[in-house]
Length: 501
Ligand SMILES: *[C@@H]1O[C@H](CO)[C@@H](O)[C@H](O)[C@H]1NC(C)=O
Ligand SMILES: *[C@@H]1O[C@H](CO)[C@@H](O)[C@H](O)[C@H]1NC(C)=O
Ligand SMILES: *[C@@H]1O[C@H](CO)[C@@H](O)[C@H](O)[C@H]1NC(C)=O
Ligand SMILES: *[C@@H]1O[C@H](CO)[C@@H](O)[C@H](O)[C@H]1NC(C)=O
Ligand SMILES: *[C@@H]1O[C@H](CO)[C@@H](O)[C@H](O)[C@H]1NC(C)=O
Ligand SMILES: *[C@@H]1O[C@H](CO)[C@@H](O)[C@H](O)[C@H]1NC(C)=O
Ligand SMILES: *[C@@H]1O[C@H](CO)[C@@H](O)[C@H](O)[C@H]1NC(C)=O
Ligand SMILES: *[C@@H]1O[C@H](CO)[C@@H](O)[C@H](O)[C@H]1NC(C)=O
Image (cartoon, rainbow, N blue to C red; front, side):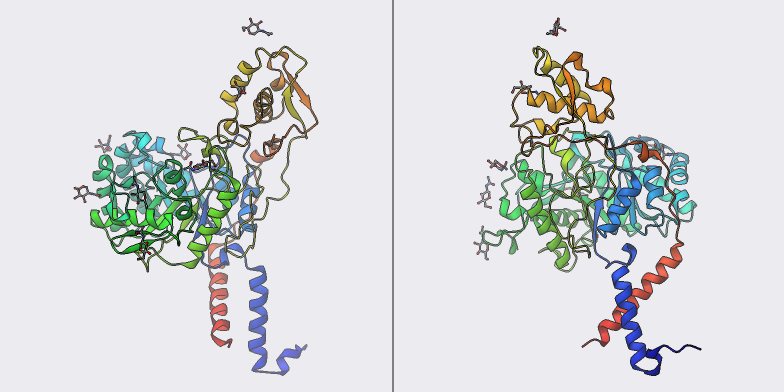
């Protein structure tokens, strides 16, 4: 029989072993065992060359991000998340709402096809009915269907025995509530959706689900809502804003309490809130810069980490906060502005845009590994040719590819003609996987191996996309095992904390 040297010292040994175990577990603590932080990210897949889902999941893991919100039930994404232990909010696109409202059968179909089959491998915590059904630019296209759809999805979950595990929520847009006085105490839900929201809140409280709402300090500032950059960047101490005895030193609390006031007015003062989207874009608009975004994220992380509430809810900070967003997406709609394609903490290829400690154990943003790029080739305009039609060709390219950085406020706005034509050509060329004929442009295009980037205007090289369709084999670790090991880590951590001086 072999005796460990430690076992010769009973008493000490147990504590020491525990300590060792904790140290080992802490070092290697997987993401599902990380501190119950309340931060998550939105992972959208509206990109022409999305990073392969399994690489994104690795990106989430190396950054110790414990929860994601998805806009839809993309099978590749859900398969990649299986066994990761990452909590998931699964979105239902707005377009599906009319069908889901009118038929319980279709709701059951959706749950069967898009949810049940991934459980328990994927830890689905919420189903978000609609992506942004209350957005005012959508008018009444979606919101009349949202409650009926939510009720049908809830019924479908009950029928699949999943209702105790998965909660149904409906995301409220940043403009679903507002304040006429400009002060939080004046917060009300928008008049045209007031009735729907009232019934929705009743539904939420019946099922004890939180209210998902996006807050947008960026848009408040961008749209000139009389708010200072100091307040927006969590640095309003010098010039606080006062409202009925409460003092506000950051724009997040201003928006949050505007929503709280709207909830109080609607008769649901206790309803818990999840911030479903909050972030700062880095391109495509004035003030959408790396520097401001970095400052904003640092302030946001610190605020969320401090776990303090707002003046109206000092003890009830948001239950969870989802950063908008994980990656840039060149296919997002630019109706609200070109900045829409630049919300990412990371560029489209998973490279960190700036340095921030998300406060979840990874001290800085960690880039995606093993990213597979297309060859180092670019498409530019051939200046030896007659360029009188070049602008027309560029406009054609931009109608398909992403040129959001070329307009005012964008990082390539400053490059002069025909540099901007080259940018447009290259954007199209990369999006088309560098196919030779996609750099033709009536003979004006020229493929080059010299990087045409100038200053902050980056001409990117696209990603290999064949790999994104390849199915990945991820093992489904039984949930029970995960739950038990997390539980043990917590218990042991707690014990150590109790006995340490
Ligand atoms: C939603 O579905 C219900 C039940 O089928 C129907 O009565 C109602 O008219 C639908 N709502 C809208 C806005 O069409
Ligand atoms: C499952 O989700 C996908 C994508 O969101 C959608 O296109 C499809 O219609 C859904 N399936 C059903 C049965 O609704
Ligand atoms: C803008 O805010 C300042 C200070 O918060 C306030 O004094 C001023 O009246 C506001 N202006 C408008 C037009 O609301
Ligand atoms: C708000 O109140 C604080 C302290 O009560 C005061 O120092 C500050 O000047 C006030 N701000 C405004 C805009 O009235
Ligand atoms: C809708 O407006 C009425 C009248 O102002 C108010 O009593 C009710 O609480 C509002 N409902 C919501 C959800 O804000
Ligand atoms: C944004 O940035 C520009 C240029 O730096 C500046 O002039 C402007 O005042 C800023 N604020 C807003 C709200 O656009
Ligand atoms: C420019 O386009 C016009 C109309 O398509 C065409 O007639 C003309 O020949 C083109 N010019 C050049 C230099 O290609
Ligand atoms: C490029 O710049 C020229 C001159 O400023 C402008 O007329 C043209 O519209 C720009 N093209 C694009 C694609 O931005």
